[in-house]
Image 1 (cartoon, rainbow, N blue to C red):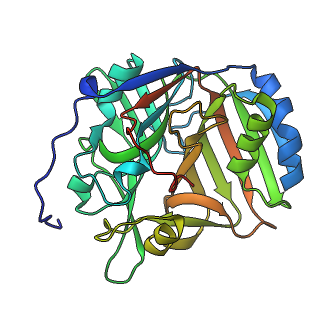
Image 2 (tube, rainbow, N blue to C red; image 1 turned 135 degrees about the horizontal axis):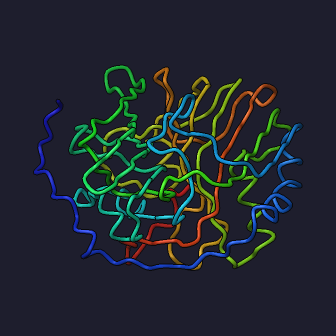
Image 3 (spheres, rainbow, N blue to C red; image 1 turned 30 degrees about the vertical axis):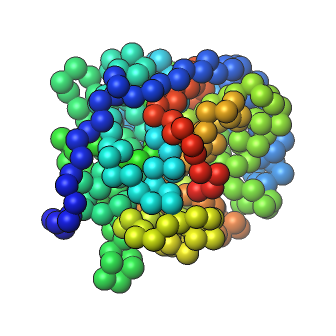
Amino acid sequence: MYKMAVSLPETLNMNELPVKKLKLNVPSLNEINEVILPELSKNFETVSIEIVQCPDLTQPPFYLAAEGLSGNENIIDVGSPSYLLPLVNRNKVYNFKDLKQVTGSDPIFIIGAGAGPWPYSGVNCELAGNVYSSCNNVINGTRLVKVNPKNKSYILEKLPTNETRFALLANYYSSNGLKGDVLRIVCEKRIGSLDFVTSIRQALSKFYGNQAVGLGGVILMENGKVNVHVMPDFSKTPINSDDDLNKWLNFFEIPTPLVGLGYLVSHDPGLDLRPQHFHLFSEHGAGGHYHYDTQPATIKYTAYLNLAKNLYRVDQPIDGVSFGKD
């Protein structure tokens, strides 16, 4: 393993971190269907939205740590890009298992996008979180994606069961992992300018205004390619703008099938939220931070999403950067 020339931090005590709780607007799934259908139809040639019983997400092609997305449904925004930019704060290391202290969920099933545990990987990296924790039982299907410094390619690996840390920032959907009703959204052939996730979020934002609505879950991407970024190791020089950030990041066009994990929230009531964040993994070694599909004529999205009842803002910075949230 790569040896860091810095001392490794302790995992932060979740009980000592500031936590703010926001009750989200929770309309019916039928209403969400009606709200997002027009916007999706502007951007995709074929759109189907149904309310269905969630399939068993532990099975292929999803490989998640729990069957469903129901039971004490929440959105959790941890940390911030401000702990990465302009220079990294290496003390910001958290643990998935501690999040049950925040939501009161036991068991807790957590999926979503964040920064990986650099004390384990040796370098900064992307993380597709996928953890089920109940009492002393942990199922960990989390993947991380990092940059190979030798040739600037990406490397995807699955974390061992006992490695449940993450760092800096994270955007998760959590539940008890139970099966229940969810939205099944299928979109094929993109004809508009907005990507799949942004189409949904903007539709919710326009309709609900300052009433925050949150959706989280899993997205299967097929029949095309997707643009992603993968963070390299921490920058030694300050990153002070989106332009600096894009020059630092590594961008890739990766093949499907891909599984995306994350959330979107329609409105930020002053909590320095990340409005949408999905990270991708696959069984063929590709992954990263989702931006958009690059072959709109062939792309297919199949999403299983559920509404969150509460939003927990954990360890919000006092002064947040105004960029780096795309």
